[in-house]
Length: 287
Image (cartoon, rainbow, N blue to C red):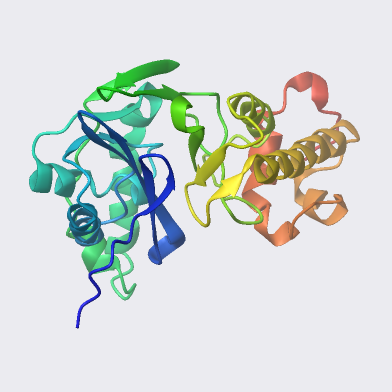
């Protein structure tokens, strides 16, 4: 018999999180008297249909809005499906994420067109892109009826356009990929490793010692976890600055640095960090 148990788990009053095995993605629902706000929509139309069924199975109210935490495909390729399933919903994102989502999606489609043997390529390529309809620069408050929800762009980190979702009355922060329950978090070719630690300082300022933190991927965590991840990201940033100040070239940085994580996972972090260093923090030779 099919499993009919709700996948969504209530992690705080009227805040539910569902964890999906593919990419360990988390989808969050925030409930108010006017309906449900969904944070991220998964990575394909097919997976989004599973999410939609899980929302209906939970049965706690109508879906009335979507939030995309950033422009990476695994967090918004379900947008079109949610609109098809639940009606013409507003889709919220930062200005940066909305402006760069189409190009980011095109790169994803191109990768999978060139890799037809990938087990998910056909599924991903069958997805229709739907862009955000409501954007903001720094912060905005959404009215869910008897509850206010805050969307905040705390700075650059995982991407240049990350947002976090704060539910003040429930003491919940949905961190997107600024927080990942993994070591290290994904530091990619569009990340900002030198700024990420100070961005997390702002996010930590939104928390109490009891805050429930929902990462973009992995298990629900707490403030202490975020503090630890911020510290390790800070070590990465300061190690890059130190190596560059001593004239260590980028090509030798992974071998010479004392890194908190496996250096093989930090190639993009080092490359991006060296690219972003101000001239005053570089000492020749760096070739």
